[in-house]
Image (cartoon, rainbow, N blue to C red; front, side, top):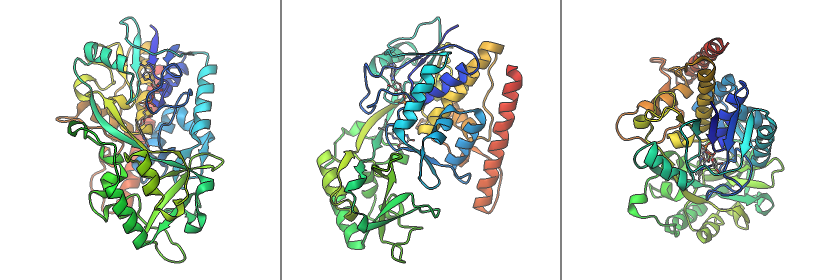
Length: 432
Ligand SMILES: Cc1cc2nc3c(=O)[nH]c(=O)nc-3n(C[C@H](O)[C@H](O)[C@H](O)COP(=O)(O)OP(=O)(O)OC[C@H]3O[C@@H](n4cnc5c(N)ncnc54)[C@H](O)[C@@H]3O)c2cc1C
């Protein structure tokens, strides 16, 4: 039986390699460059649409543990990330162009992957399908899914993109290089005094936004636009994206700090960390130039807001991310209601591994409990009540009561890693 994958994004690529590396031929359909979503701009596979960071690598963070699990499972994207890494303290950030270039090259040269640059509008019943079309899935396929697979509407929320500036337009006398949690000099920290912060805050609150109708207001809490955060109170930003904690300028903790992170290896582009926004383009330039280091900033890319769709996975999918109604259709990536680059990628990896096992041995393996990836999959396929997108978090790993938080996190990390290793070993023995 043929395996067809819709979308050469993060989940689609992981799924394709998980299958192809186990000897299974896959057709990987990608609509670019014939058609682009509103945020995808390049022709390449595994395009990263917003921040170039995959989050922390520290095992005291959920994101760090998930990446370690993915490494154990053989993630191809983490291999590419390690080849294209740019300095970002404890975060795993990549040069997005090189990352996508290598992913495309590896796809094109893999003997078992057939990259087909076509838009998928319907799914036949004779193949296995992995729908990894992302949160901005093409509308014709959405219509097909609504009518034939999910039998109802998709759910949605909004996701915002942060602006990027040219590094040669930053005023480096108004800040310093340094990193919050390590000695590295990976971030440029734009310093604001209390007066400068107040002015910035007042203008941010007042600035013109791209308005949405009432029924469209549905943000995902983890990536709230900066102006929405500001509306919660003057202090909120000082505990969020503008927090000065852990940073010193001329011997003192600054009042507020905006961090800029390298977007490419050359360091010619810097992204405003945590500055996703839905201000109008004109207002972004006016308001963000009130940050002293950015007063003459030239913007390579302005922020924007986009509607993301996802399916009601708890109702529609079993624990293998397989449609309960149409067993030849699997889903992976952000369309399943996981949130974020790595959470999306790991679902593709999991589905790909399981379909390989199914095609070779006629069975699939449930993901382990007490792991980040298993937690994500169990959550999205069993959540009761209203379903909202979820990303990896320590709530998925139960180690009982441990008083010291750091020790608790490290214990959870160890449990998750051990369980993932055991799962992988069992998987390999089932397969061979
Ligand atoms: C505006 C925005 C900002 C975001 N910012 C962040 C962020 O900063 N950090 C973070 O962790 N996550 C962010 N995300 C989430 C991020 O997009 C996802 O986590 C991740 O890219 C999803 O991976 P995916 O593989 O599911 O989909 P994608 O990576 O989007 O890949 C889907 C692919 O499918 C293709 N496709 C779609 N429909 C069809 C079709 N019918 N036929 C053929 N091909 C098709 C698309 O062209 C695309 O290449 C953001 C998302 C959006 C929309």
